[in-house]
Image (cartoon, rainbow, N blue to C red; front, top):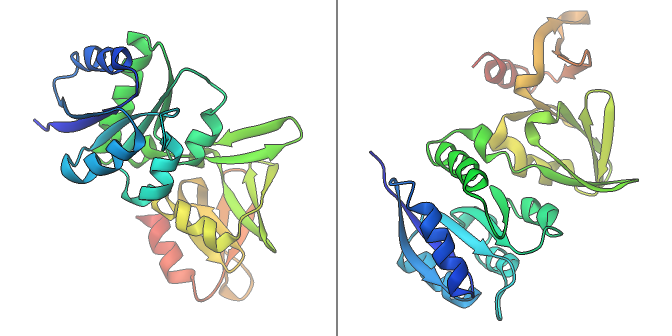
Length: 236
């Protein structure tokens, strides 16, 4: 049975005790470090080497978001944000946190988080779906990657398609590809990224060209240079 190390970061001792108490119901997890501020977290990440971090957002000096910025998301363990406020949720998911808990945390809510954490640590890519924050006329919203069918280049922007609805994001397709390729997206051609699970079939077009037919009905041509790699990725 695996055992995973946990770092708890919160400037309030009572909050740290609360997380430890909730964790006691999950014997596969062991607290390896407790931190009161962001500076201690950055040091403990190297010394204690935890697989999971319960990270308070508002801490003295370096806050939770600054910890991730300094460490970089790619070098962070699995992160679950803890906060007394819910207005930071979208920013937390944009920082690639696995989950976001508002204190005080109920046992039921904590158990749901631990289920996702366990799946993520065991290599379940769906559990690590970080989502992408986009702005709409009604404010910001979080699109989970498994909801996005394909992404289209629009100059310095990208257009994210969920069924027949699109969302504009001020980020280039190249930058987005680096963020989503580990979650099952592949280039169909220079201006399109496709979620492989959204491909219903690969059809032949004029002159033997290849077309990815999505579950939404959208037909996306696959360039000649991408054809072999894309078809292999879909079939695997």
